[in-house]
Length: 241
Image (cartoon, rainbow, N blue to C red; front, side):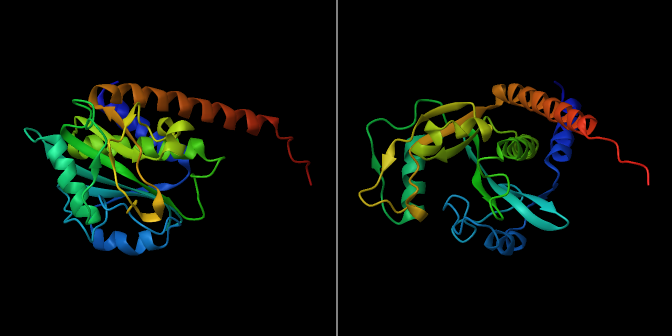
């Protein structure tokens, strides 16, 4: 699948989603939008009060219905080439939570999150649009567009997120568009994470895996189009007046 085909597929995902996608780089524009979402907090790694974001290192993906935001997710880019990844994570987590984390044996498996990396997370919604039990297709479409725009903006070696034990065990990472999973190797005596939802797993998709993710989205859009057609054909024609 070449670049143009991926672009066309991203547009098909937006059409199937039924919402209008906006890519927003200005944190000041994003703040009031995020306050209207259900989650009630931001991860420190994406909180604009704790980070200095510019178009060179981050953006927010916003899905709107008639101009009203319904879903959102944030992306942060870091160039970790030549950096000791374990030292970087220890410093970043200590700065984010004002408390040094405790390494649980080894750090991330070698090479899991290194090089040019993008964090894609903090999926938010208004009235849980797309995030409820019946919204998995919406979630796959939305996050698929997010992965596409992340590749376009930053060309990362790997895109990753942190997930809870509950989300990992129910297979949510596949709906988020992440194809690998490994244990998160840090903890705290008292969890400082907002809402107590401590990260327990790291999920990621490598650059070489991105085409396969897009192929799976192509199958999804085809299946949704088929179901929509079957539904329209099954409806009886209206009686003439």
